[in-house]
Image (cartoon, rainbow over all chains, first blue to last red; front, side, top):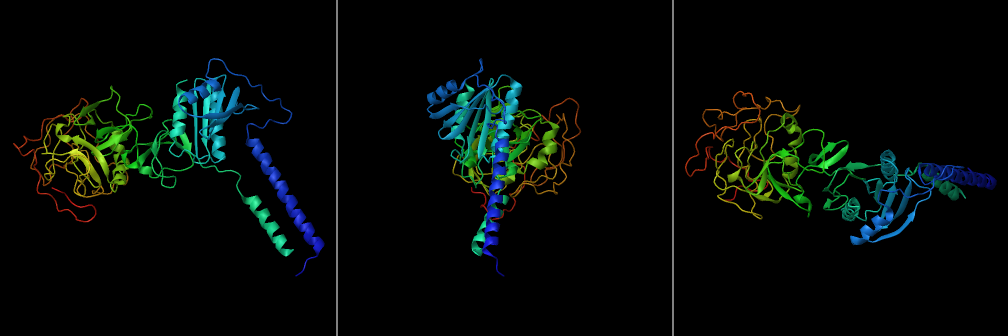
Length: 161
Length: 322
């Protein structure tokens, strides 16, 4: 059975177009699950620290004091997980997020959302731990800390803030 | 050209079937052993967390609110944190974890946990270990057939158990005393068995005094078996624990008498000591049997009243070493 060259080109082109369209759908779906993605036309919430609860810089200083090496902490825009303010960075190469909330209810929802999202992303280990109205999220994606010793040190230091 | 078409279609099929994300999340309450697929050792996270793997052996865990809590002895899993010695079954007294209902550790004999019981808990520190001297909740008995299998999980594991002097067991200890078991190294100091209030010694005379790490007491029967008759069908001679009728369907024996304070049931010793059913009818008033000794211990004999040591199978772990 033979197929004309023109038909072949049409078929391959169609396949590629379909692939690209599906990839676009996936990206859209992923963006939909990503709390960082702002809704079209929506104004991203303004990131503001919350008084009366530990801020990221305090956590970073505490980790440094405990002999850890936090690096690259920067504000997240738009602010994810329903928080008022979030920063993300890495500690001993482990992804770390610190978010501040205005109330306990929002923090509870944010905590659940954080763990659910990381579960969908296939995290090997994840912790969401709160001190006052600040939520610490630690995420090990590559089994860098299989015994959880670094993560445990992170949490225990944060707990004392 | 046909090949290009095939490659294109294959790529399309792969692109349309590959899942975007993994979704497997397992929740843990606290520290726990790592499964082999992840590596050796322990996860030291003491706060609730999630992993992408299930527990290596569910017999070592309890589930509370959908989260796994490791209830076993961490020692055989390369655990290098704090450890405290316990003897026999006891309520889980980890102050960092709240259970909705009374939750018990069913490990026999000497074992470790990473927690010490809080001061208000009814434990006595004697002979190098914490002994639970309170009253077992009825749930202890009702759940025992289900959870006592944790001992089977430890049976093939040879590791150093804590050294505990069972001769000074608290009189109010209601559990069973065993002086050795499959896979044990070190462990209880067994000495000459003694009879104390509420504790019957019903075993062949064990090695005179065994101490510490490196001496394998294993292979033979656990030395003393008794928990005041609340274990119908429970026979510890030999490996593996349960030798009675199939435990399916849960605990079918009589409920534990709540307040038996009388002496143990009279009557002749039956071979390996008293293994009968429950003690005489309960008297009102709470508490467990706190009666006097079953019989006066034979002078110098340490209270051994059983028959000769049962024949031990030579296979699988050796016999008693005197």
